[in-house]
Length: 338
Image 1 (cartoon, rainbow, N blue to C red):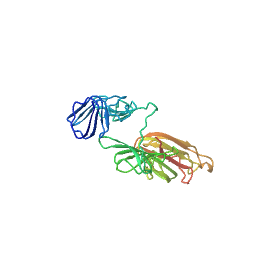
Image 2: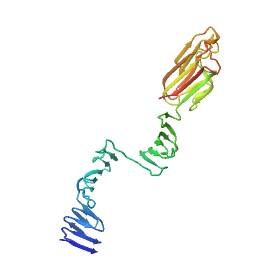
Image 3: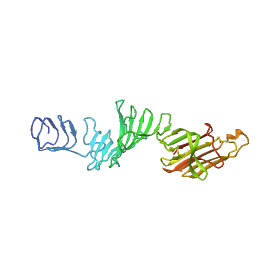
Image 4: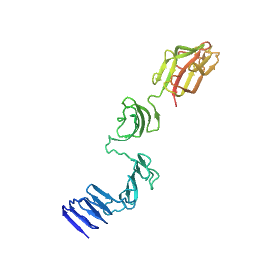
């Protein structure tokens, strides 16, 4: 039996072969095998069409219940209650589970978005591609108290950031930059440049040369150095009045101290490195017979663990030794290395 309707009408009792052109208003049309609606453009195997919607069979991966003309194994099917899946060429491509989890390449997603391994590749890839040379692709990770982490690729530099309480990992022109923000502005914390060099703009480091005068006495006859020339003091952690360096953060600090020129060859050379006023290292060189022995190579190098607010100091023993104030031979440095 075949019925063709043009305009408006009402049809019941059709088993197969319904061709509709125009608008049909029906309380219910039950079709036994196939329905083709030109104005709506869909074809299904067994369909109930109600005035409030369309009901289709559940379908399967190889035979989805909603398909385009001429491609019967690509479309939408319903593998279980409250679950929607999409098939391509008879293979499941995407699934939305009843809990809202979305799976790509997996039929059992365990996360809000779960991307499974591809059968023709050893890895899965998600790409965010901006067609604007000044645009950028961004992943955002939020928690329920407003903190956010951003992972983004920028085309023109460090112009984007995640806002207050955010952590940013950016790649621009081959340079990887790590930034943290607590005030609503971009603050770079570490960078890996195109040569692989790692830099941290606020990494504590200090270097100085030439003894100037005595600082604080930190042990009996052990006096901190004040320096005549300070080359570098990132973070302004060295007090050149007391001669004491205060560690701004916890970590491993590399300390180098060279006391190579003394005031007189008749003096000993005796240097100390102190942490919290306790001796970490010391080194000595005896007096010499001639003026040339004013140069007495004495060095101490040490790596130590420090907590934030620990103190470090370059010192000498003023009972037996005295450093020269000449502008060569004496220098020291402190670097946070880990």
